[in-house]
Image 1 (tube, rainbow, N blue to C red):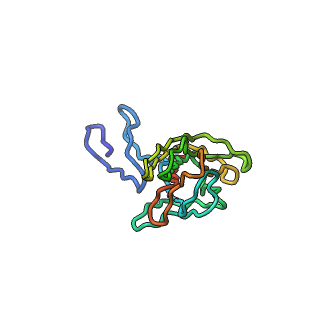
Image 2: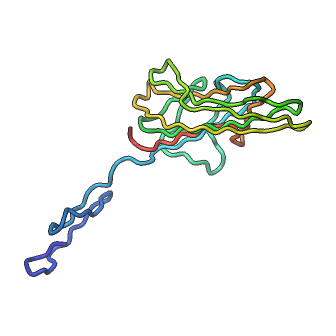
Image 3: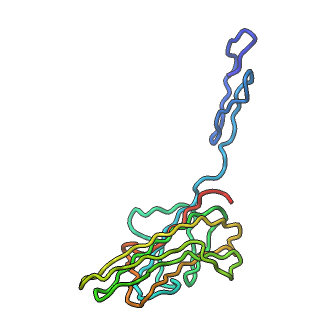
Length: 194
């Protein structure tokens, strides 16, 4: 609203879709400005579909989560032999959850995993990871779970990739998986522009 010298309103200003009204300082009329860019634009979920014993990189039996009502925002992640490619640049929150089962005849000293990233599509580092242990179940199967997170600054989708690994003390620990329930899986959430 604009005012004349007597303080009477003389005009009404209107903004457009995607704008907000902001103050321009004392004694000055307000202005309409565009909303800031950025924010959450992508979210994707993947999981392991078949169990395996022992450790190593997860390279197969992967699917995008497809349960009824699953959340997906923006373009999906893609993967080849367990190496995931991001659809766009940005700051991405990666989470990795592993569920383990140990046989009833012994304990597992360590069972863990690692988020592995590269910025040159070649050499990988382990920016996030860790271990759990599984006690002897005394004739019963025992279970453990590990959860890892990492915020990855993806500046080049051709070079910046991620993959996931399992590390365990013995082959008797099983990485749990299923096509209907995410026991072992990954989420990818784009937080903002890079």
